[in-house]
Amino acid sequence: MSELLEDIRVGIRTETAQDAFAGSAQGQGKPILSATDLRKTYDRATPVLKGIELTIREGERVALIGSNGSGKSTLLKCLIGLHPNSGGQITVMGHIFGRSPDATQRRSIRRATGFVFQKHCLVRRRTVLSNVVHGMLGTEGSWRGFSQTTAPQSWRAAALRALHEVNLGEFAERRADALSGGQQQRVAIARALVRQPKLLIADEPAASLDPVSGRDVMELFSRLCEEHGITLLFTSHDMAHACEFSDRVIALRNGRIFLDRPSADVTNRDLEETFNG
Amino acid sequence: MDEARQHAMPGRWSGFSPITFILLVGTGALIISSMQSVSPTPRQLADGLPGMVSLVDRMLPPNTDPAFLKRIGLRIIETFQIALVGAAIGVLLSLPIGWLAARGITPLGRGGYLVKAVVSLLRTVPDLVWALLFVATVGLGAVAGTMTIVVDSVGFCGRFFAEAMEDSDKEPQEALSAIGANRLSILFGAILPDAAPSLINTSLFALEKAVRSSVVLGLVGAGGIGQELKVAFDLFQYKNASMIILAIFVIVLVMEYVTDRLRVSVQ
Image 1 (cartoon, rainbow over the protein chains, first blue to last red):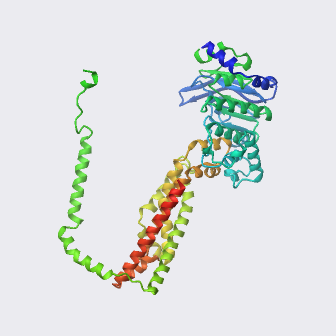
Image 2: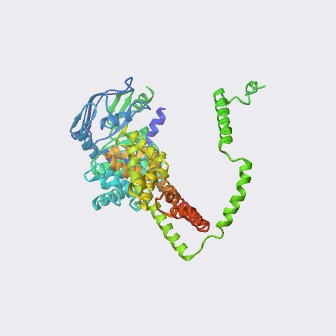
Image 3: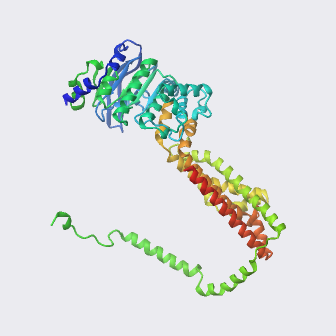
């Protein structure tokens, strides 16, 4: 096991990625997201999160790791008010809420947050450009954003720019389901980035992709977040991705934070204890 | 001998529970007793055969008088207009109704069941009954026929539109919801595009059904070619009637061919 983890940490990590994160702002920016004594219980009986305390600062790239059922996805969803929590307090971009954000807070948080899901969740019968335009839904005048046909010209232009950023500009008019899995995930990234979010949340963005496509997607994430100064919080089962494409790793075990340290300082023993402890 | 071979042989009728058996026997008895009451006996069929031959003889050849054909042509156009306009309005009305009735999607919560109940009511009442109601309210003619087709189409499409929306892919909807999209944006952005093939199929079936309905609505005075058919039979003009039946056959056949082709192109 330790040899395997060594391979992951040493063999796969590239110079490029190391360089990209060399000047990261870990621990120096303003807090963008924080949780105090965050608790979540399903069905009134199954505690999933047991008093989570964490602060994520602007510009950080944070990987959330842990075995299945450790509470990673639940934590992501609670932190941004997608799921109501059972106790504690959350502060997102200055909005403080307990159980769940009120309607105004929710709208404001969602407008400043981009989401990428494990499955890309595209509307398969729509064009790639329409799917990226969907990223503008939730902003002012969003009723026009259901298709690129009805969207304002500025939105269409922004969507095409976002597609160029993920190297898919030439596929703008194709139907979403005509693209490969990796390309579809890149479209999902373009959709998340089109309204220039401050915070990007990704729930196992590479899990449904083959190793090469998964790596491409993670490299794209890190490059775009770096370029646009976006705070990135992602979950991953892939330790190579977690360590290489973040500058801080938070490990969950049994609903509690088991480890929280710069990714460069994470040891094989840490990873072993996270998954096998 | 291996362990599997030691299992006892299942009985031939082990799948039948006593309740299933009783239900089957009961259903069979109901069908047989009903047949004795309402089905034609061989003697009745034999007695009716000469009458049928005589009727067919009086129907042939169909009337091909140009003036009559022109009148029939105009009635066919009116029939088609009733079907087309009625189905189009019905389909348009069914979109919001289907949305309001779709479980898990409707903004009305449990109120969606009420919308479904109203749609069921529209579907349950036969089109000829609706036609009688509209003839009584707006008078004889094509308008009553169009209103009948609208109601009939809403009853048909409302249900299937709701089901298509319920079956649409949930993941893009959740993704748009997470972005902050409101219900209408999710409807237009994710639900309708995903459900589109099913919605178009249902709409084409509704049009086909509307054409078939519109040819008989005239029997109760709601316009269209059915009105000519009733007059022809009432006045014993069987050659006229056979021409009208032939025209109805052609219009239904053409409509089925066109909608089949459209359905194939939608897939």
